[in-house]
Image 1: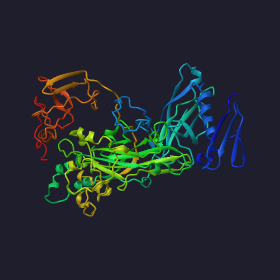
Image 2: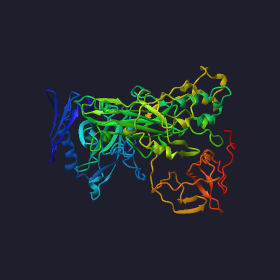
Image 3: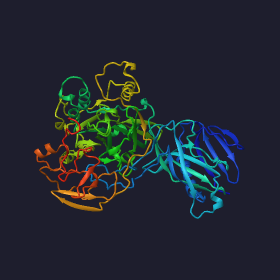
Image 4: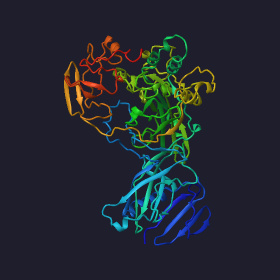
Length: 616
């Protein structure tokens, strides 16, 4: 006879019924379903969904499932929720960057946390025979069971049982299901960080348990987002005016684009009083929900939250849908390195991505894509022991700040330029130590370079273009609609593209998968070095011992911004990526990025004229 299993479920949340053949008897607030097969099982169904579940009972569930029933011959692995798997650390994650002294000692717990919508949670797993098991025991799955709990990720303690499928018998002819949908009467709450586990019974009724896997529940509808899309005040105005008619300097598309550089940094300060809430309540978890266009990298108290930042979010039609990420901030607030009774700073570093890239022409048609000034949206959901939640840190002009930063240019076509002196000057910008209040309002048409490290209030992103108007215009450009048949719309005064519905990432982010060292390093002279990695790849350079000593060349290389950098006698490093070598000189002669084909491949590495493809 096996040890009894004690399960505590919320009846209203789980919607479970007593299995056939069991006897039900009501005793006050509880219903006991008692069954005595070859092993004894007692299941307690709570009739009130708000009743707390005894932590001791929950831990007893975990202890029995982990310690007492590991004799099964079938093991479950590769657990996923909505096809998404938790990624604790990218396989090719670079060494952690050097941090400022004021940065937090806490660290993000994973590189990718799956986020699902409350209305659609689907569990999947794979299974295999356990090493050393008998084939007759592992050929049949008799039953499975899914358990979802709410755990304090820092305290490593089960706080409550959220949903339990109970034992589900499997038909021998059909086998185990390909997926299992959330079966509770109530969906999971937005902002919760949950963990789940699957138990499998083999042919001889021996059970084994999978490891615990984590996922989060994110906003589904617009009303669930308390934050607004925010932008730098000058970015929105320059983007709008460059589209208006009239012969002004801002009519030049490229000049308007340059007025939105350096790219902005966003930040907000979170007071610990906002986090604590009621004095009688204990924090269980803190979930950051965030997105940005074109690309964004989030940091908290000076700590980067993922290695995927440069290419978040994934590429979609941003006028229809935009993906958002979820990050577990719990370690920054509670636990050994947490600062619960201190203020925190959330920072967002922005890139252009596919949203506000450099105007180009030729082989690509980026004008058909939705475009606008860089913008971000975020909010933090705090979950307490009582089950209550609170949204804090939401993006708005009242509590957020924006400033020009160290990224002078960030473009998928023409590469990225970073001012390391500005980076050093602003090194604590995303920590409480580097926080400062807004000092002054920006002047209209101000030189963007003079806005560096000048924190001001952002504005809400807005546009006069509707999604219906954009779809119609794209249909006309694609010759799928005659302009004569088009519906009339008011003449817009603001031309940024509309932003679509926010959805959680439906695919894993692009993460570093491998660390590769150069096969060969050649000194080409004149401060030029050729690094041959021996394979085609997509990646970023990482200098393990710091950057090489910069040079100030006379005419090499002619990169974007070279003329102004040379006139100021600036020291800089230019990295040119290529896919093949010029046979006689050994130089790179075909460039994939950093110029979109403007590089001529000659031995002097001189670019073709900037007017070669378009005058701008």
